Image 1 (cartoon, rainbow, N blue to C red):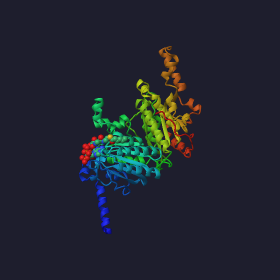
Image 2: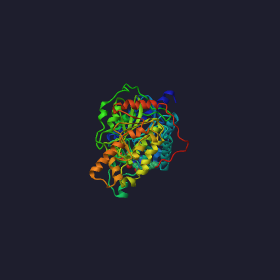
Image 3: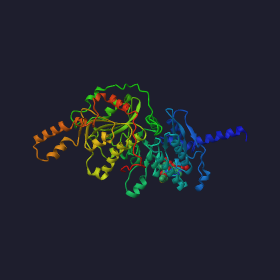
Image 4: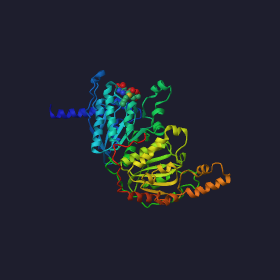
Length: 511
Ligand code: HXC
């Protein structure tokens, strides 16, 4: 064979691989409002940086006439490229080839980039769009899934792992994304469930649509499985790029610092009057976050789920931080099961990847009720304590208003290892709120007038920051307008924080 024929052969193979399952099936993907696997990879990465691996891999199946249906790449696009100049690995399931289903061969392609991402210390981004296990391959496909799960777990806390669900993701296939750090879903074109509407109808007689059961909003607002909702594929890729800007490439690195033109000394008079005089009046905690972060840029995580707590990333003087903030504007900022789980997982993520945690506390306590008790608020609340106590990254706390009861302890208190604990002058730190306290202390012994006086006295004596500040549990009572500067000063103080935990195989998180 002449050299030119050899080049021609390579050209032909490259062309064939790019076509996946063929123009007709690719067009069908567009018709459904989705992008193709290759288009997604292109949108995700910096221009001209994608390097493809295993482009000529084919399946090795001989059942059901599959030996006659081999497609180069076997429905999986894998490789590496850059986001903002930093290395990432990527895999993208190509729905045009056997519905993006997972074969032994294309599972091996994912496994290869998983191994590379761990070895080279760079994040892995998975773009999921698949009919699940390649039915023709049986247990070989299941083995492929389990190999992927195993590596998801090995990589957890070593490199950031991001999943986007951009089409179907059903059955056991959901568990690889579930093992990763963040899940993005697209509105109207993606769904995730362990068992679909038909099986549910047979087993429980419930009727539910795919969208209601496992669409983007179902998982962003109800189950808490997903962290982000995008309007479409392009927006999802842009959002992943934005998220990556806050994350280090691996657990041995610090998160990336960006040049900051926003003055550390910038004060905000608005914050002086944000907390209402009436302790029962709500305000939006996000106003504080948006006020203090660089350029007012806050990247919220799980914004539709357990809205009584707010989590997300921002920068302070160029350095990424994670915020955990009770939200008085939703259920008075109470801690319930969902809020505890949402915050605990986020705290653990930040700790795993060296991202300092800023906690804004305004919490009346844990939510009472049989639903909460039977649902296990004890063990779920314990997860948040566990997460904060175990975290060794810098932990800075501000109590803006209420810190009552166990919730005072939980929200990154000094006693759980808070490095700097501030309060606003409006802080109320006590075992419980004045009404509850007076009811217990005096039962029904007081007239209405005496009761009001007792409530007033209790508030004046205990519902202030000064008891806690007098004991050194609070390092400083700050002026709200100086919040940004105070946070930046505390972070700078913690810059070289060294803290190790006792050696152990692993702890026993109350699951
Ligand atoms: C092989 C598959 C496939 C699969 C789809 N295809 N799923 N081939 N294995 N799992 C093929 C179809 O035969 C079809 O081929 C092409 O992909 C496109 O599929 P359509 O059905 O035409 O597309 P659409 O109407 O969009 O429906 C998509 C779908 C549906 C909802 C995903 O295909 C579907 O229900 N597939 C089966 C899903 C499933 O039950 N998977 C197993 C789940 S259990 P042609 O040649 O016609 O284009 C599982 C266990 C994992 O995954 C366990 C891990 C622990």
